[in-house]
Length: 352
Ligand code: KG4
Ligand code: ZN
Image (tube, rainbow, N blue to C red; front, side, top):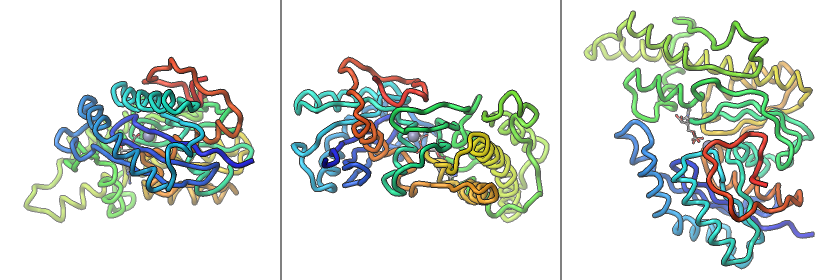
C-alpha cells in the first residue's frame, strides 16, 4: 500500500515550520523564525512570537508545499504540535491545522513536539531499532526516554530537575556577556579553553541512586557565578587574557554539562539493553556533546544517531515524521476539540 502523505505544522516557540513527508521520506519543508527579534531582549517574548507565527504561517505553508512539489489535495493526513510549548504560539499552529483539517476533510494528529525531535531522525537514518534510548536536549528540554515504538510506546526515564542544557548554556552566556542565545558562543569558546584550568561540579553527582537518569544544571550555573565573583575577568584592555579566561570558564562548564548528559545516556542504554541512542533538539548542535557521546557510546558498543543540524532545531519535519509514524501505526486521529498543551507528558506521543 502506498505510504501516506503527511503535512506537519510546528509552532511551539519561535519557529514556524511546515513540512511534508511520505512514509519515512521528507518531500519538502520550510521554516521561518522570529529569533532575530529577541536578541535585544535576551529571551523570547511570547506575544511577539505568537504574532510572528500568524504572519509567517501562510507563506511558510505555501513554500513547504512548493518545496515538496505537492498540492493540498495530495495530502492524506495532518499533524500539528499540540505541546509542550508557549500557549499563544501553539494556538496559532493548532488553529491553522484544525482549519485545514475541517476544510479538506483530513485526519489530524496533535503530536508531542519533544518526541518529534527524535522521530525526525527516521527521515534521514531510516527505521528505528526495536528499542532505543532517546536523548532530547534543547533550550526547553533535557530528557532521557526509553522508546519501543516512536508512535505508541515511549517511557520517560528522567529529565532535568531545573534548567535544560541549552537554557543553562544561554544563562552562562549571559553571565559572561555573550550575545543571546549564548549556547553556540559558549560552545565555540569552550573549544579554545585550556583543559583542566577550572573544574566545576557535576549536577546530582552524589545522588546517582536516587536520580539515575536525571540532570540538574542550575547549581552549576551558580558555581560559574560564584567563580566569576571570586575571579573577576581581566579588564577589557587586556583583550587576549580576558578572552582566554572566558574560554576556560566555557570549557569547564561545557565539560560538566556534557559529562552528565553523556554518562547518563550511555548508562541508560546499558541498563535497558538498547543498541542505539538517538539524539535530538537544538542542543544536539553542541560539538562537545557529539564528540563525548560518540566516544563513550563506542566504548560501550552503542550506536549514536544524530539528525543533521537543520532537523535538530524546531522544524515542521519533526511533527510530520511523528504524524507519519502514527498514521502508519493506524492510530486514530486526535479529537477535534483538543487545545494547546503547554506541558505534555512525555509518555503521551499525541492527543488520543
Ligand atoms: O531545540 P531548540 O531550537 O529550541 C527549543 O525548543 O528550545 O534549541 C535551542 C537551544 C538554545 O538554548 C541554544 O542556545 C542551544 O539550543 N544551542 C546550543 C548550541 N546550538 C544551539 N547550545 C550549546 N551549543 C550549541 N552549539
Ligand atoms: Zn524543540
